[in-house]
Length: 242
Image (cartoon, rainbow, N blue to C red; front, side):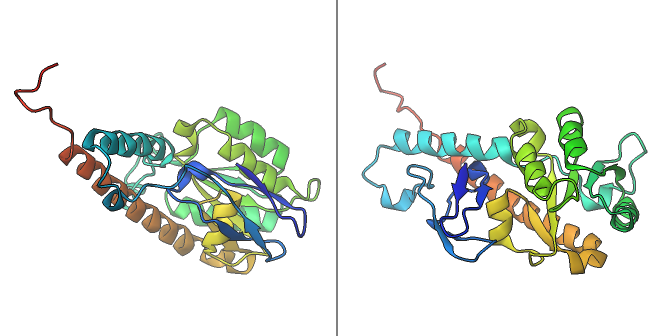
């Protein structure tokens, strides 16, 4: 979904299926003014307040929502403890979308220490082309490129337009001098999993690890809900007539 800030006229892409409930108001990361978001019908229903609904209707709503969420969750992210044990062929792959050599080298060295096989895309055009062809578990995206000031946003748009089975495997870190590290509001607006301030890039390993831990917490919640759905499956009474 695309939204536009009426104050600064900047447009953003929101991956609405990543979140069960999208806030009605979001702060614009560019000018800090509020953006009103209206997504009728996309909120997760409060099942406790729907006692008047038939059990089978509630079941159908939960199952449909879970299918949508499941399709976009990056459930195949490698466990932190599994990376160093993997062989070269089994190692997870990372893509660094960065034009500056000094940052390329630092990110490559840091991410390789985490057990990834690293590739580098020095331009936004190359990054968008590579992402269509290859699968990656981790992608870092710089927000600006000399040949394309909006290049980072184009890469994020390309990532979020990928088929769900590709997108859900990726942990996407958006790197910018204009954003704070772990800015959940901006990550949500831009369709990334986490943000990294350029001044904090030396902490990239711990930031990515923290981002993975938060994702894993989200997955645990998902599976808890999934188990609840399984336990509350509608059972037709034995004496019911078909």
